[in-house]
Image (tube, rainbow, N blue to C red):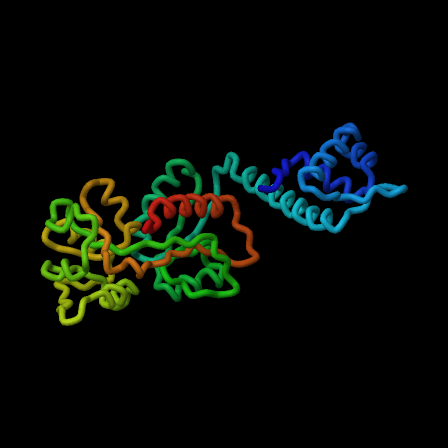
Length: 304
């Protein structure tokens, strides 16, 4: 493992490289020349190579030093950017953030995120637009929203993916349903129960149909584009629906729904993406919400 470069040493290296002199760097930084020289010599010994050529008129970076100084300056820029973001969040009491998302996510994990966000940042207005997948991206590119969150969002060079999360599908039932409590179930195990499923306007429907075993009949009793309705009906045995874990986290915490992974779906996951416009910095409110969403989704990510 390489040496750990602390912020003070990074600053020393950057200033020495800019001024070409330890004495000049020390004067600018208001520290002793011996302190800077000692730190540089120790780093060169750790790395096993000189970083500066000692010339009659000062110092010049070696090839190794050139590589290191690029890393040093990148790190310092990232550090400054991080401090600016933290500073912008301190005392953040006003603001507005708009996010476009899908119905399943709005009614699932995002609802919990926003509830907690409102508790800690009551002065920030959160606007949520529920849209189809293609319209989500269009709204973000048009600047109508700050963030977009959805499954299988189309790639676009004008978008930057903040984070991606994979979720396995599962059978969602009442806690006292006969299928509840198992380590996993096959989709075929569910077909003898009344099924409440997504209609063909939702990508989830195609995924579920692709898992139906050959020679078995897939005959839902309810088809809907309302994730909320699917969850409400699943609370009454013997109904079964199919959703991602992130979609039912709130109901599981309240003890009204149970989630059992589908073993057939081991190789089939739903990928949720949180994205923003490329080359557009998020303001304090949007950055804060994005951080909360990322943390919440990591808790619900698929684990094989």
